[in-house]
Amino acid sequence: MHLGSLRTALYNYLFARKYRGKFLLRIEDTDQSRVVPGAAERIVDTLRWAGLCPDEGPGLGGDVGPYVQSQRIKLYQKYAYKLVETGHAYRCYCSESRLEILRKNALRNQEVPRYDNRCRSLGNDSVDQHQPHVIRLKLTEGKLTFQDGIHGAITHDVSQTEGDPVILKSDGFPTYHLACVVDDWLMGVTDVLRGIEWQVSTPKHLMLYSALGWEPPRFWHLPLLLNKDGTKLSKRRDDIRVEKIREQGFSPEAVLNLLVLAGGGFGKQGKDQFFRLPEMIEKFSPEDLKTGSCRLDTERLGSLNKLHLHSCLGSEDGARVLARQLLQLLAEQHGSEFKASFTEQDVIYVLHQTKDRFDSLHELLTPDMAFIWSDPILGSQAQQHYEMSVAVSHLCQKLECLGGDQFNRDRVSELLRSIASETGLKYSDFMRHLRLLLSGLKQGPGVAEMIMLLGKERTLRRLQPGMETELHSSGDAIPGA
Image 1 (spheres, rainbow, N blue to C red):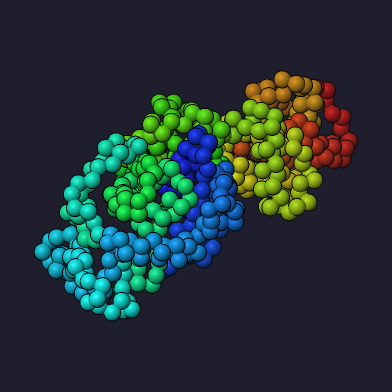
Image 2 (image 1 turned 135 degrees about the horizontal axis):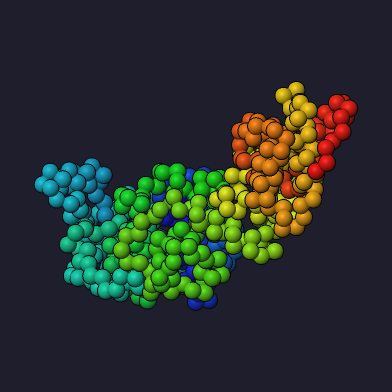
């Protein structure tokens, strides 16, 4: 699923929840040439991940199923032939080769290809009705105006630009036009929020409703989504595929906020405004949806996800949820036994320390952050001379004396500089050695930051064994702090 499809699902979900309706999921698979195995299951999984759980749909049950269009073929055929009987549609026997000739002639004359409605005038007795055929809707001539919930009054004269459209194909499957009208009516749909590309087809759908004697729903056509630079959004780009965004560790809340930031529906929004899903439902106003094309800046996902992390860490329950998510990711990376090494509180501490540094939980899984979660394996390179041992010992004593609010990054940074100065060590050498003891890394975060990430207890545990070994072997006393 790409972000455009998720945007459509989101606004339908918000509309249904806002007005206490039902959010239905229907799988449109009538074009069998485009059916991808497993796609329906991935759609359901993506919606659940995003928190947009349908009330009814495939595998969910409901009173108006089945919810997969390929399982409703006989229904579509029934209404297609009913339209033939009432004179609103007809059988078309034109071959593919004839239609191709019409198309080529139109292009040669620099005209828009369209069917010439040849079979509209054929009587039922003039052809063998058992021959392969499609069914076409007879378009009504003249302008048709309808009220779009977003764009206001919209007028089209479809008969001037198109020939009679196919509503039932020769294989017995319906086109989108017939299937969506039949399903929306039988499923009791009152409002349809869909992409702007379907606005031009709405007059055909209204003609179908009229021919079948049904009251149409209200239509709300969502504006076109564009790239940040104003170019057309490509469905093939990885950065707009929800699956790829999930893999990068962005939260569903960040993705949903990106979509509403682009599409509107909430009045004037501040740059750093962030909605939880219940807030979206409460504040959603379909009248505030944007009418013009919307630019989607996927680069903002990072800052939006950081707002999500900050929001979660602002409450105990939210912090615990994040901690469990991170523990699960770490268990997947390091093995299930890893969970026993850290408590939720341990992880919450790390999350608070890193909340301004990282945009997503996945950034805490990178190799340069591995030192947080596992002790480094140190070889002979970690051996330290006497002066370095004295400095490490001095640091440990000072850290042990820091309590409560005193244990902070600024205070630790001061200690590191003062101890290097007092012991006569070059500051960069001292930092290089401490970084090695704490993480096994030659490069990485600053030492003060590492100490804050590890916390006082784990920092002392990593520094003291080597320090004690070196000092005891030297036979010299440790100077006082």
